[in-house]
Every structure is written in structure tokens, then in C-alpha cells.
Image (cartoon, rainbow, N blue to C red; front, side, top):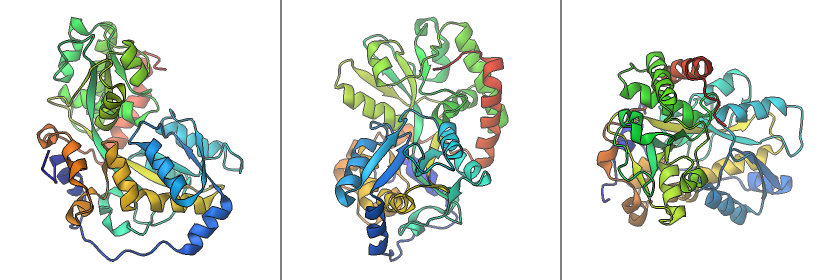
Length: 368
């Protein structure tokens, strides 16, 4: 793909209140690097190595700065991450996370609960205004769209849209990539189905999504197992509703055994921005700040792109000629993203409340 500004990029940049500008960047103070090295360790949470190439990101950070990285619960959801901060606010031990990577709506929620501390990275001005907290409490990091990862050894005719998932041929096949009561990815998967079913943005879309999955569950098509590469390959969950970057990375990792097709649905194409933040109670605050500097540097952003995640500075980096053509060529065709919608914070809060509070009553499937 040769188009350097796919529709997904233009959509997220449309959130910004001003055009992308390339200002002079502040240097990372040597004092911060020294202080982080003195702390010696960074504690992360909910960073699977195959999510956005986080394995490569973590190794790159360790190699560059020589810090150890203590990785907590890679499969935790966004709500679990906030709870980990709450539960360990008086604990400076290895179970206390320094940093979090959460769904977009969880950033403001964490600020409201006093769980984050401010820090503005040196590339701050290249992050669109509407995907960051003005005080530096949290900031968008990368984005993608919900897709279907399909094991084509089992499903020979992959679904093209959400409504297809209700067909008899998808019995015991469809899974979410998380618990919709806690996982941002799963919550937005339910929401996407609701939009495709005609729900309006916000609460109604969430409610329609619950109805869709209730019908899917009653039909015997929904599998209450958290879908991932292993369950996809084994055939336990032949269709997984996954962020496109996770689906594409999973496909690559399986190397054709089994073959996997990644489908962006024809409707209900929901894009999601994730956000970074530093715990207000971080045991290693300087290591946390240095981690943020690495993530938002060209090196860190390109490592995310290697995992098919569109980094938040993508537009500025393309403009500056900082993105190798080989990486641009690996991205999915722009046409797949033309219908992508980015829910506002208000819409996310409304649909998240509807889905997390209504899942047990309306759908009644214990996803684990």
C-alpha cells in the first residue's frame, strides 16, 4: 500500500483542533536518564508481547537504557489496570504498576479517581490536542479498528459483516478478545456490533450491541472464551473479534498454520485510540517518565507500527519523512478504513456504562 495517509490516519487527525505542526523538540534531560537508571526498574501491566509489537518495544527500551522491566499480568483489561493502581497505592513493591496503557475512556476515569500524575513528553506538540489531557495526565498512543480474525481451515467462507456472525455456519465459533465487563477491546467490539445493527452512537449503540450478542449467545454461535492466537489456532474460537493490529500480528505469528484471514467488517467499523499514563503512586516515577519518552520517540512509535498499530504521531512522522516506505507498504489498504468512526469520550462513556452494567443481565455469558 503506497498511500501514506490512509483514511484511518485522517480520521484520527480530524480529532485535533489544529493542524499538525512540527515544532522544535525538547531534549530528554540527562538528569532524567540518570535518575531512571538509578531506580533501575520499570513495572508495566497488561502488555502482551504480540500486542502492537510490545515485545519489541520492551526489548528496545531495555537495550537503549539498560533498565529492567517487571511485567505484570499481560492479559489484564483496562479496568484491571486501574484497579491495580488502587490496590497498590501504598505499596512500593513489585506488584505496583508504574505505567498503564488503557482504552481511551479509561484515561479520564483514572484522572477523576486521582490515579495518574502529569508528565508531558518532549514530542507533546505532535500529539493531536483532542487525544490528550491538556495537563499531561494521559495521552493517546496508537489506534486501530475492530476486525474479524478467521481460521480459514475451519471457516472456509469468512464473515464479511457483523450480521453474518448470526448464521448457522458460525455455531460455536465467535469470541471476543476480552471480558466485555472489563476489557476495552471487548467493550468496543460489542459496541461495533450495535452500530452495525442500527444503534445510534453512544448508549443506544451499546444497548443494541448487547442485544446482538444475546442473540448470538442464544443461537449457540458465541463462545464465552477470551479469544487469542492460541484459541484461534486450536479451533476453540475460529472467529475472534480483535483489533486489526492484533489480528494481523497473530496471523503473521502463526505463519500459515493455520491460515488466517483478517476481515474489516463492511459496517460497524469502530476505531479505538488507547492511552498512556503514569501512576500517581509509581514506585519508579523517573523510569516511568523515561518509558514515556521512549514510546513517543520516533524509535518507539515505529516499533508500534511494526506491530500494525498506527502510532499517534503517525501524521507528523509521515510529514517529516520519518516512516520507512517498507512499513507503509505493510499496512492494510486504505479503503478498508473509509467507514471508520472514532467514538467521542462522551459516546464511549455512555456505551461503556450500558455494556458493562448490562452484559450479565442481557447476555449472561461469563467470558473468561
